[in-house]
Amino acid sequence: MENGAREQIPATLIPGDGIGPEVVDATVRVLEALGAPFAWDIRRAGMAGVEYSGDPLPQDTLDSIGRTGLALKGPLTTPVGGGFRSVNVRLREAFNLYANVRPARTLVPGRFENIDLVLVRENVGGFYVAHDYYIPVGDDPHAVAVSTGTNTRDACRRIARFAFEYAVRNGRKKITVVHKANILKALTGIFLEAAREVARDYAGRVDMDDIIVDACAMQLVLNPWRFDMLLCTNLFGDILSDQIAGLVGGLGMAPGANIGDQAAIFEAVHGSAPDIAGKGIANPISLMLAAGLMLDHVGRQDLATRLRTAIELTLVQDQVKTGDLHGTATTLQFADAVVKRIASAS
Image (cartoon, rainbow, N blue to C red; front, side, top):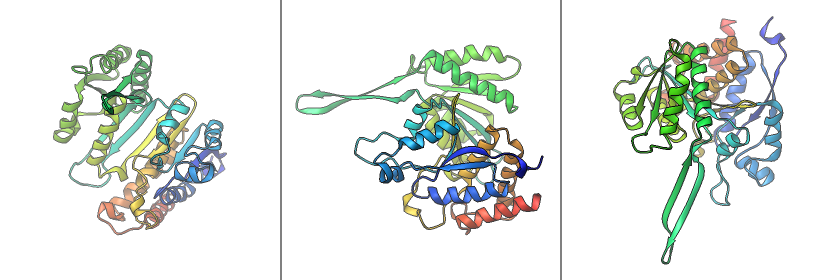
């Protein structure tokens, strides 16, 4: 059956803030060239949500994702002050999006060649449960700051099994568990124990080793090719995923998937970059690659492969690049070049 003949898949589209609408527009153009596989329900969040309803995460946006179980979102800004919690954290909690997948692969030759890593991050526990409080001493109400992280054995097993299943499906051979069990003996020790327990079910199919987080950060600079997949707790995964993005050209090249049992949200890893918003110079590759992960998720690997191939050919053969990659293309010029590549391969 031809791509355009398939029924469109309902999905929520969140343009976001800052450069969000620009990179979303570019990504939608590219998806349309692939036969418009998604039927979009466009909703607001972030600052656009505050302007619309007084809440950076309006109820009708949550309802839409609840209906579709699938969303593509641009970067969101959480307003400073006003008691608002991170919109991204709220989305993960609302739909129990416990698995964060952040791949990094070399597309543009640079300081590091042939990088092909996948980081899987536990997405709803650890220090991001936000059990923060102060202890007053004398006349200082904030004399002592305390933050408590929480990992459950069940949640650690769940993310470990997700990672091993991902490895099996995608032909990955080794998972390295990143921890700090020498210091955070309980919080990350239980994570390492659970991963070792799950790993036994995949013996002979996927290897597992482990590394302390600081040693991992050093090895990612010295010898990143020693790693295939990284399995991380919430905080360590957040930090190291930005580091591996740096190996392949920066956050403009870094897609992210947030996956739960009932819903999945795909995003650019970078922020809303208000300093360049409206200038038409933002790199849309991160969100385009996130759309590729979204296509993989819904079983359209054929379209995902076409998308990734078109992006790579646009960069490497056509030499069309945005300013952050030392090129001169605008956001939409890059999108148009990808569309041209898709059309030429049809």
